[in-house]
Amino acid sequence: MSFVIAVPEFIATAATDLASLESAIAAANAA
Image (cartoon, rainbow, N blue to C red; front, side):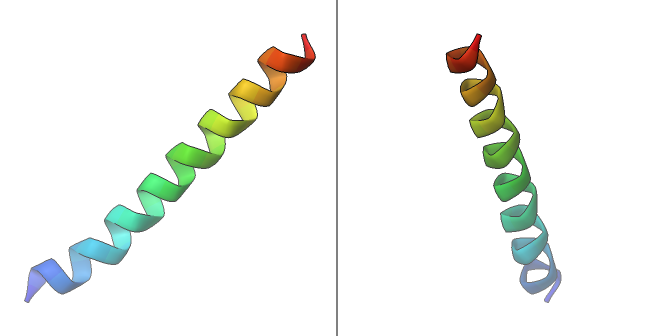
């Protein structure tokens, strides 16, 4: 049952990582 709880947390973490990566790329392009 813990799997059901862990999945949304993993998705949230992945989304946060993706957003920070995207902003890093945008900053590099602007530089």
